[in-house]
Structures are given as C-alpha cells and as structure tokens.
Length: 57
Image 1 (cartoon, rainbow, N blue to C red):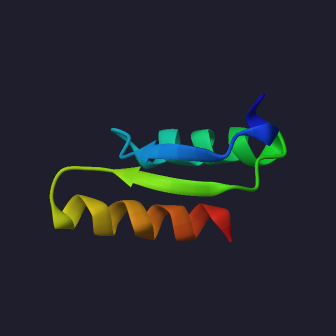
Image 2: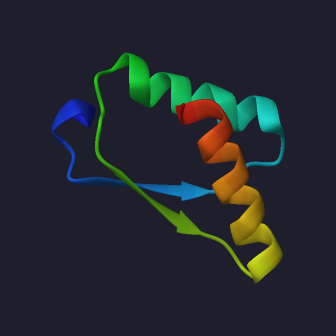
C-alpha cells in the first residue's frame, strides 16, 4: 500500500537511527510522495526538516 499513498506523516523519532530506518523503509517500498511533519515547536520542526533532507536526498 505504501507506494500508492498520497502522503506520509513524519513525526520526530527518539533516535536518528529510527528516522533513517523509517525513511529507508518508505523509499525501498517505492514511496515517492509528500512527507508532512508532525512536531511540537519550531525547533522540532526544523530538526525534522534537517533529518528528512539528510536521508531523502
């Protein structure tokens, strides 16, 4: 189902390794859609953007 999803919700994980694992799972399944960021506070949102950029590109 993941390759056909219209979007994916990203929430900051407790560790960077879990973030990398989640993104790898999505990429390996063929997902190429949007990522929405769910976080509390600007600093957490900025951290989420950084991690997504690091592991998506």
